[in-house]
Length: 172
Image 1 (cartoon, helix red, strand yellow):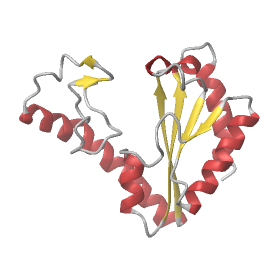
Image 2 (image 1 turned 90 degrees about the horizontal axis):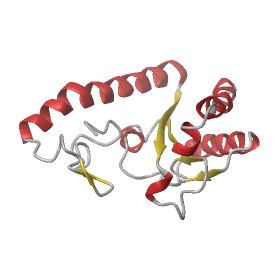
Image 3 (image 1 turned 180 degrees about the horizontal axis):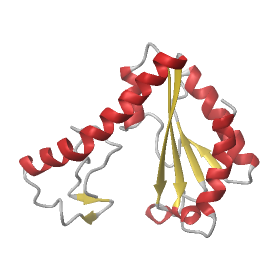
């Protein structure tokens, strides 16, 4: 992993030297300067663009849903990663939790096996979590969609998820 755009710039895994037990050759001996250059060139512009878009939606609409899409490898924990999609969110945030529950329902209605806050916590280190803190006094919802490689690598799998999420987004 060259640079993890979902982690904060100071997070130790933003340029991991080891990822799930595997050495990341390009990061194993990364200097502080090279790490900083990656963050400045790739990470910071991404975070700033997302931040800018969220602020724009808050100004224009008074609320924003920031939906961040990722994948997970079920082989990293085959005993528990048996589902199709995880919806990560903070249950303590009423606006966010209500949207997440609607999304969970929509995905389940499409026949997908869905879990709330799995395979990761909805409050772990991530761009949504950082923005949730930054925008705590506003109607910001930061939801992460985690789709299993079993789905994304299957023919039509990505389309199946997208075809379910799009009507949810259009209904907002």
